[in-house]
Amino acid sequence: MAKRLARKWLSDNSSPEYRLTIYRGASKSSVNLPSLLRSFREGRIRIGSVQPILDLGVKPGFDYVTVRSSSYDALLELDAAVQSLGCDTSGVF
Image (cartoon, rainbow, N blue to C red; front, side):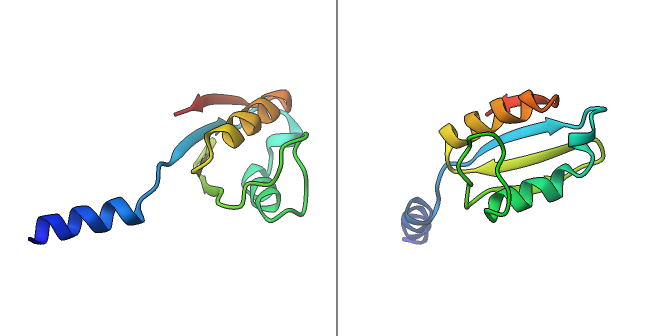
């Protein structure tokens, strides 16, 4: 019974999550990338023609930033926009 209850709760409360890793380049646009992405999420700035992603999670690393969202298509658009800024990415997975 406990396993069935746990399975039902997980299926009701979970959603798919997609990730994109952005590697910081030598360009000036990648200097403060985590702050730029948080401002993008909150709608204060725009990156290309990408609409703000409200559930965008930003996790900075030493020379990369990992972002996650439940919207695969939005992350694909963000991937293309960030690559046009001169940063390398891992692709959406």
